[in-house]
Image (cartoon, rainbow, N blue to C red; front, side, top):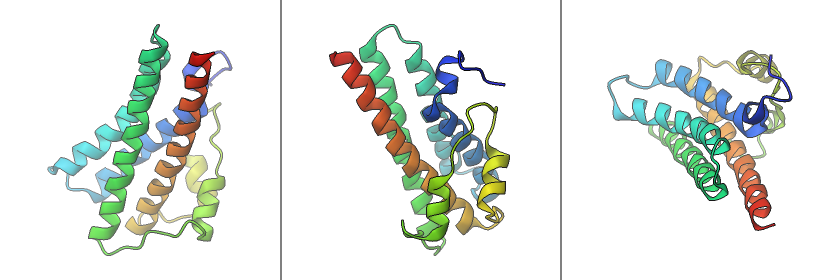
Amino acid sequence: MITKTSGYKSLLVYRTAVTIYDLTTIFCERFIDKRSRTFDQMIQAARSGKQNIAEGSKELSATSDILLSSVSRSSYTELAEDYEDFLRQHGLPVWDKDDLRVLKIRAFREDVNVLTNLANLSNWTNLDFNKPENFANLMLCLCYKQGYLMDRFLIAKQDKFVK
C-alpha cells in the first residue's frame, strides 16, 4: 500500500511511469526481437522516464530536479516514436485521437494506492493485449498522456522555482 507520505511514489506522473515501464517490458517480451537494439532501447526509455522522476525528486537543487524531469519527459517522446515505428513497420493503424478506444484509454485514472495498475488497466479497457495493434496503440496513448502530465509537472516545478 502506498501512503500519502510516500513522496514521489504517490505522484500521478510517477504512477503512470511505473505502468508504462511495466507494460513496455511486457510488450517488448511479446513483440520485439530480444536480440535487437530496439528491444533494449524501448525498455531503457521507459525505465529512464520512471527513474528520472524518482532521482529528480531527491535532488537538493531545483535546477537539477527540473533537468531530470525534462529528461524523463524526453524519454516518453522517444518511446512514443518507437511505438509509432512498430505500428508503421507492421502495417498497423495508429488510432485517431477521437477513436472510442483512445478516449477510453485517455479517461483511465491511475490508482496511486496500489503497486501496479496493470490489472486495473486491462480489466478497464477490455482490449485484447495479445493483438499487437491494441497493445501498441494503448502504449502510444499512455506515452502521449504521460507527455501531457510531464509537461504540466515541469511547468509547476518551473513556476515554483521562479517564485
